[in-house]
Length: 316
Ligand code: GH3
Ligand code: MG
Figure 1 (tube, rainbow, N blue to C red):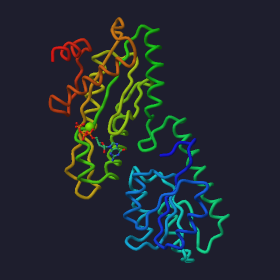
Figure 2: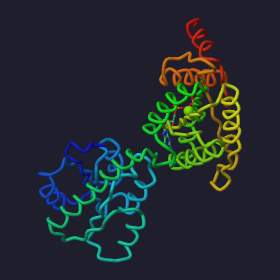
Figure 3: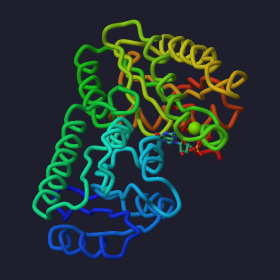
Figure 4: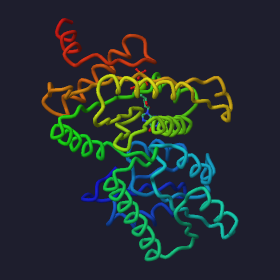
C-alpha cells in the first residue's frame, strides 16, 4: 500500500468507456490511476496495486458490483480498501445494500467532478489516518491483540526491567501448524477466524498481570513472561498448546472435525545470570526451539536451554 508521502493510488472499476474517460480526466492530476473493466480483474489489480481507494461501478459485465464489494470485504488483503460505488441506479434499497456490505459511499450518476473529488479525498484521508492510528495504538486489527511494534517495545522494556530486578525473563514463540493448508482448504476468511480464536485461547492461558501476548506476524504469536523461569515457561507453553488443540469449529460447515495444533519454542534468560546479550538473542533462541519443535513432528513444546540449541546448531 502506498505510504503517506507518495501519491495515492485509485482503482477505477468501470466497463463503460465514456465514464472511464470522464473519471480519468477528473482524477489523473491528483492520483495514480489503475483500471479494471471487469469484477474479476478488479481482484487481481487490487492485489497487485494495493490502491488507497476503489471506485466501483455497480453494473459490471461479469460480476455484480455488490458481489465484488462482498468479496473485497471478506479478503484479508483487500478488505481495508475503501470502496465508493458509482451507479446510475437511484434506488435507495441498492444504496442501503452497498453500505451494509461495507462500501464507504455511494455516488449516483450524473455526478459533478467537485463532489466526487471531495468524497474521494475525504475517504483517502480517513483511511490514512486510521492506518496511522492502528500502528500508534500497537494493536493488531485482525485479532485485537498487541502487534509486532508493541511487542518490540514491551520485550525491550521487560528485558531491562528483569535485568534490574535480577529476575528471569522467558519468551514463547507459538506457530500454528500447517496453517497454509487450512487456508487452502477452508478459505482465507475462515483462516482469519481461526487466528482470532487462537489468539483468544492463548490469551486465556495468561494468568499473571505481567504476562503479555502479541501477534508476531502471520500465524505466529509470541508471549513475554517476566519473572518466569524455564520450568514456568514450559508449563505456560504446554497449557497454550493444549488450549489450541481443544478448539472446536463445529459452527462452520465442514470444519467440525478440524483440529488446529501449534508448535512452540521457549527461551529463558537470567536464571540466575544473564547468558544472552539482548532481547534479539533471546528471541532467536526461542525461534530455534520453535524450529526444533517443527522438525521433530509439530504439536509440541521445545524448551531446551539456548546453549544446547547452539551446540546442536554448530554440530550440524
Ligand atoms: P508450518 O507447520 O511449517 O508452520 O506450516 P504453515 O503452513 O503453518 O507455515 P507457512 O509459513 O508455510 O504458511 C503460513 C501461512 O499463514 C501462509 C499465509 O497465507 C498464512 N497467513 C499469514 N497471515 C495470515 C492472515 O492474516 N490470515 C490468514 N487467513 N492467513 C494468514
Ligand atoms: Mg505455521
